[in-house]
Amino acid sequence: MLVSIDGDSVPRSRPRLGRAARRPTQVAGAAQTRQLSHPEARGRGVSRRMVVVKLPSLLADQTGGQREFEVEAASVGEALRGLPVSDLLLDERGELRRLVNVYVDGDDCREAAGLETPLDDAAEVRVIAAVAGGSLV
Amino acid sequence: MGVLLMVGTRKGLFLLRGDENRSSWELEGPLLTGWSVFHATQDPRDGSLYVAGNNFVYGGTVQRSTDLGKTWARSEGLGLPEESGLKLEEVWHVEPGHESEPDTLWLGATPGALFRSPDRGETWEPMLGLVQHETRERWHPGAGGMCCHSVQIDPRNPKRMYAAISAAGAFRTDDGGETWVPRNKDVAADFMPDPFPEVGQCVHKLLLHPDRPDRLWQQNHCGVYRSDDAGDNWERLEENGLPSGFGFPLALHPRDPDVAFVIPEEGAENRVTPNGRLGVYRTGDGGQSWELLEDGLPAPAWGAVMREGFASDSLDPAGIYFGTQSGSVFVSASDGESWTEVAEQLPPILSVEVGEDG
Image (cartoon, rainbow over all chains, first blue to last red; front, top):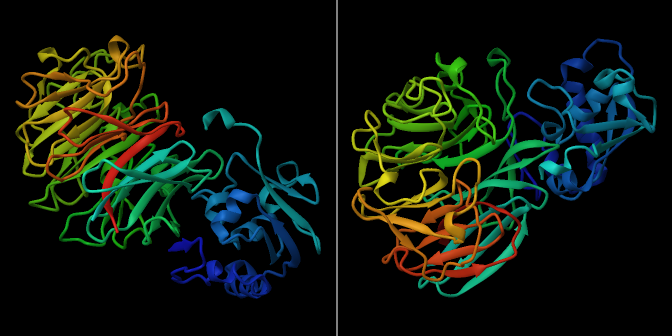
């Protein structure tokens, strides 16, 4: 589907995360809806936590200006997959893009369990572009 | 109806809006800041703008605007399947589909990838007949990666198309992209042990003329070529008056299939315009002779124009447009006879296309 940057998204099977981005109080609900229908949420006994994901400004341009998302997730990967910019953070195999760093309460998730890193309640998940690679621009 | 120039740069998209005389221009931008716009084009069937934009952190995206750049939507689900053993790198070129297929688009990308969208960019499917071509092990990347940069569709028949990849060569399909045959006979690949292999040529730009669709032109790493039989045979042309057979961009005349324009560079080892000037070369006889066009073009100047940085409109006289790596846009409203610089100090320009404003 096409994810609209101004909010006029054209939904397919996914919830209207683009549209939700204009009303931040709706985001947690939208993410929960997705989590409930997501295979990971069904009968695996994992504990989900409410966490806050913070995005860099370039990605906020792609979400209608929203830089913070409250999501319910058990792991870093689940938190990122629930975002409207998940395709910009994860490649087509679902792996974290090489120059995307994710810090959970200040710790680099790659030094923990990567996308499988579990999340605590009220954890802050911060996405930051790596410093490397600027000469490519 | 005014002219809309879409100028893709390393630091976003600029739009230049011109009158029908192409003499007065207004600059808008940058739009899509943070994205390197490898290609920005307009679908003539509905006026939508499409951008192939890349970010070195977040990857390659296709973005669509249906309101001439005010708002944009991004394609999702763009990637190569696990079975291919490949991952999408950068997106290089968006080509609107045949007029009989109004929702179809094509996308060329690295590494050596071609995608088709049946729904104006909502979804994309890889053309595995090309991505997993039997000759792929003999392909290798050019300096910019193994880009599929040229996609041309025969206006008489949507099933016949051409795609060109650096450095795999030119390919033709007669079944809408399911299967492809290499079309590189007599096209040199001087960097290979066999200088005339079946595949492995470094095509830089390939175009067909819509009024004579069996006539193809290519600017190659190793020469400028013309084919009059849908790519079955190629004739080499730079000895007929070009300072070099090396260069990237190529443009055609909207109505005259015997006319082509190139902007050569010194050579692969020195990628600047030759003889210390910015020069466009034009042929009016199918490449049998070439003349230098330089009226209004700067000298001394050491420029470089990217393969996507050269375009022509369909007005009369024809407008020809190009953008340089040093951030200038030049326009000729006289088939190339004289030129005017209409924008300067833009970021390095990767792409110039012309469409309709409003």
